Length: 247
Image (cartoon, rainbow, N blue to C red; front, side, top):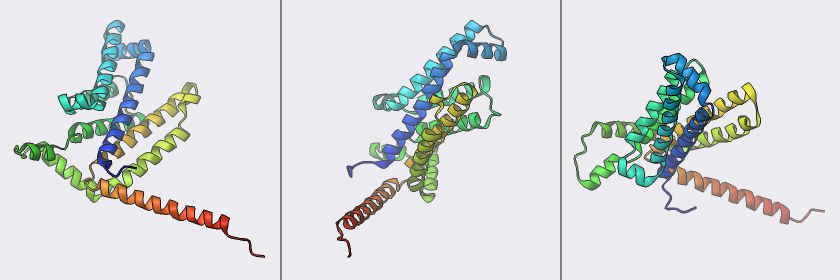
């Protein structure tokens, strides 16, 4: 593993990929059930089904565009992360208001975690303090204050050590226990809701890990411990095989 790897950037990119995957998958599902969703939205807002269908299509396209803007470096460097993040947050809560059911715990958990993860990416994707110091511009911005306080809190909580492990374990659990792609009917919808909620929580955990100022030191320390444990285990295994039997 290259020692030049920046774990904070890695956690941020992992969070962006997880967030985008769950948002795009949900948008694709909305388009797959376009007529049913248009009918439901028509009952809520009182518009025609055709107009509601057009709104849902545009809604899904805006979400997909926001995900692409958060994933492609030239795009978020050119236009920033704030606008795509605002589009996604607005989309999540619009969906929750008009098409979702916030009384369902899994849907509410997914919506809240996606909104928090998107906000973290929008606000903290670029290190504003480092950028302003490099450009030698004033640093008395309210966003810098929020950024600094959040990173201090995540550093004190050692998020860089615990959150990636919890997020990875949660993803493994979701892949093993929430296999909605092999189910059908109501069970499929329930398992899919569990899977999406788990991915959303994992994305938030990786976002918090990226805000730990000592994330790199914690990650490399964990890697060294893992290497030492594997080396000790390997030596013990080879020694057991090579030890002659006692008669």
